[in-house]
Image (cartoon, rainbow, N blue to C red; front, side, top):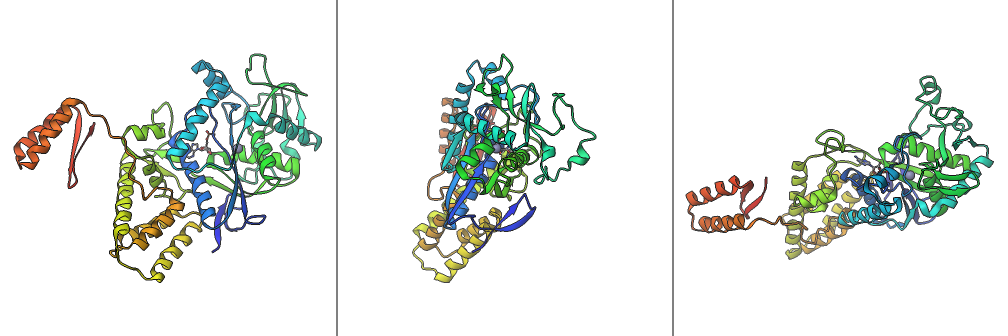
Length: 462
Ligand code: AMP
Ligand code: ZN
């Protein structure tokens, strides 16, 4: 069956076929490891994983590279500002490499918790300094770069078309150009490839241009070229990377090889929190650990991501996560019921479900539609092990561990609350409703919420 992906480069949905043989070569912009990755970042990596799983489900092999930005890059989108890694190192009183190692480990822990498969190639920027230097030299040789007293810059005016990904038109931008820091820059949009390090800069490398450190974009061009070649199949990242980072990656690769490095550019829309931006100052930057601490299975977040298309914004609320977790529980229960079922279903019924599921995932990873097929199977009154097997097969794409129990951290309740719960359970068994209500009020007075359902009572901190 054909696979259709939306390509940011052409702004259309196109049929996908690997450039060479059966192997799909993918590059993903990985994390900057000077801070914890938020659940917003994780939306982009769940999308990346979803893409991998869909391609594999269609029988393709993968050669997928993801970088780890452990050199830090500058605070603002341009080349100004303090290096993020150094800022974190100073605040946490650790060396930049210690900071990077710590957050890299935490990042992979979160990937595991969300059942995100790791790309085949994980490449750290600090291990590829020489590759980056060679790339910069090539750009100088090809006439796309120039040296100033502070850096080696990419000259955007040398490209026939700068801005093909974001549609930015430099002719309209130049007049109202943003603040220029370096007076030696030829054009306001020229960006730094290689920066001459000030004396107090910690992370710097010896090079023919003196002690330097890389600009933000060069690592991805150098590493994608090294591991995947001059032209590969798909490049992914979050939507914020389009106008600067990916535009500049394309510029660098075109300057070096004359080619746009990837045929498909796929971008994941942002996660919003309570309808707005996630920000440290608003205190609403949540981590996977926060979800666990509040008693959620991290895979409930995966389910939440499947409620909207990856190219749509997704609004995170705790209520939405609770619904997603309830759905996850129902899916697991539905799977178990089918697994125990002894009825037989017709082969054509199974084939029809599979066809609908494939059509959805191959239509630009349409997970909301794919999930509706899953629900149809769950709700099928004929309980059959064949349907359970089909769900397990679909779980190769979903990655929600449908056949495993929910991983939920039970909150440790204080002794006096546990006692009240036990007494209330007994009162309810004895149908002593007055006492049950009295005990419920006592639990609430102690700062805990009580929820009664057909499965019993749950108590959690308010
Ligand atoms: P960073 O570690 O900041 O370089 O970001 C890692 C990835 O997460 C990039 O692909 C970003 O585009 C993506 N990203 C950052 N914030 C969000 C968000 N709120 N929603 C979805 N993706 C995000
Ligand atoms: Zn990148």
